Image (cartoon, rainbow, N blue to C red; front, side, top):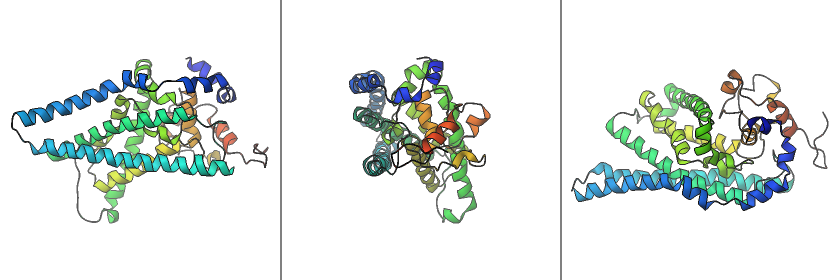
Amino acid sequence: MSVASEQSASTADRWESPQADRAVRAKPIFLPFLKTVAPWLGGLFLLAATITTLDWALGWDMQVVSRARTVFALVYMTNLIRYVVAAGGAFLLFYVILWRTGWITPIQKKLAAAPEMRREIFYSISSLTIFAGVGVIVYLGKASGVLQFYYGGNPLVDYYFWFSVVAMIVIHDAWFYWTHRLLHTKLLYAKVHRIHHQSHNPTPWAAFAFHPVEAFVQAIILPLAAILLPMHPLTVIFWMLYMTGMNVFGHLGFELFPHWFLRSPWRRWHNTGVHHNMHHRCVSSNYGLYFNFWDQWFGTNHPDYYAEFERVTAPRSKGGDAESA
């Protein structure tokens, strides 16, 4: 698919194509999963089974092995709850309640089809396995003293605590932008990132719909940052809450900011729902996660981003059409 043709094509034509709708309904889920994701998950399971077997067969009885299994299970369940509450709550509120009332309109003219949502859920739940694996890495790093986590006291009254929360968000934003651009190189896009871009009209369920390699790349930033940045566990919780909220917002399919939001350069530093939705449609622009600094500095904002935001957020008439300015 040519990037130039992606950008020059009419968004309205893509939104309303019946051929595209039929293609979505005919798109298989399990065969691509078996070819791309299953081997990686199988390799992770085989590695864990081998370590556990050796620990039992050789009589090592290493406490770290049994604890790693517990950590994996706890992290997986915690992330599953986080995903279901955040993505499911957003879906219930916007797709089931608010959209049916006519109070809000989606960014794209048609909402994603049910098969697309099932695929997003399927791949997201698979990604949680990788996140749990990185949770084990964090546990091992903390146990070995490599990662700098501190405890005790009331972190909410500590200036450094709030600095570490902001620092983690800024670090992750930079990490996401540059790894995201790397994932859009020819080889990695075809082999890895294309799975996420199967959602041309993403829903909240797409928040974690990644190839295992991409899931690992995005999750590994936590232990990498903790090597140099001392963090309280509450720092991780605050960062994850912000990250999950912005991730769901970027894939929501509805814009939450008002129509005047981008009219001041002082507000353009923060990304919008339209920003990431356009990335899924147009592919080769709008790479940022939380902030728009990197896209502005390196000229990777879509040229129609501001105009598209104005179109989506324009006040609606009673008939549902945008009112003229």
